[in-house]
Image 1: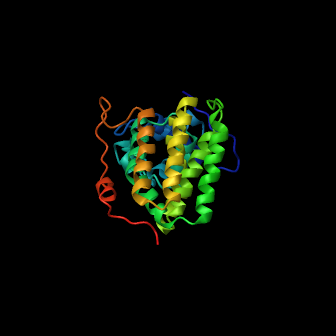
Image 2 (image 1 turned 60 degrees about the horizontal axis):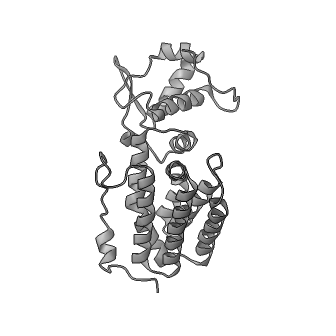
Length: 266
């Protein structure tokens, strides 16, 4: 079957082929361990040169998305082997409407484990401008929550901005940098969970509670409030702990914070 690629003269054909195949991998057209079409089949499918196909495959291979074997062809790799922090990969995540559910779960599990800790650190370290950024995002979410956002990503954009502000509020160089890199991945999960007005209102209420815990310099409360946000997201994605067929999602740091192991910023 003939596949189309964009007529973008500013983007090399190899990159366009890499993106087209990347979207097929994200959607589950090819699962980990599946063989992709041969180079010649891709040449015919895309109507491009073999050099362009090889360039596209190399772009995917360098990011762990596929692996090429002499005599065996090109094999799709497990999502856990992908370089999720690579700008090309995060771009694919942001642009794809229906990524593979296993990948969505992997991103969610990272956020479930990391963001309560990030919120606790922000409760210690956030400065006035960080709190303003969080409050602005909350206000923007509130303005959107009374509308149907099925065809409008504005609530999601402000929701993501709120989480990015928390990452930045840690004033830790690594977390701050990860906020920028992970934004497309966070957007992917948030967009899939914000679907109805009732869910938006509950989401807004839990986000407000999280912001207030950070404002009050209470790391333990911020940890629990962030966990409450993530548990709501889990339910909306139907991957909540205890859901039939879904394994329990660990909370490795919760006991530490609830035991009073952290203090407010001085």
